[in-house]
Image 1 (tube, helix red, strand yellow):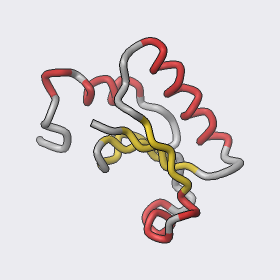
Image 2 (cartoon, helix red, strand yellow; image 1 turned 120 degrees about the horizontal axis):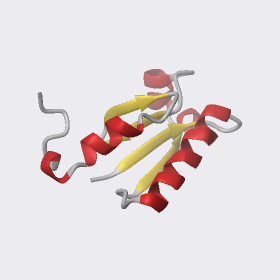
Image 3 (spheres, rainbow, N blue to C red; image 1 turned 90 degrees about the vertical axis):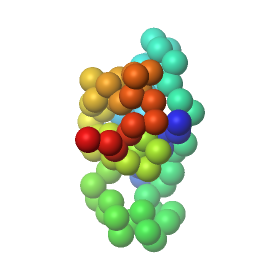
Image 4 (tube, rainbow, N blue to C red; image 1 turned 180 degrees about the horizontal axis):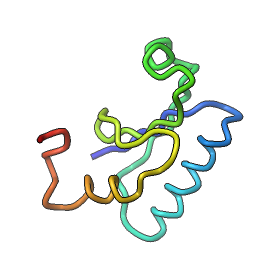
Length: 87
């Protein structure tokens, strides 16, 4: 599993989500987190524009703007492994 934080430079909400993810990572094991700049990729810019930060798990949206810790933890539960995006 892999997390991706889609963010942009000088974005307070993006910095806040990165900080909250770092704090959560000190409390529990998290998958690796890649941070990508939405403005560096035309496809990401088209998809998310100003709607950042976005946290993705294996490419699927977990949350936008604010970290939804409960949803992230639910998706990371061992009994959910391999079922992300399943109904």
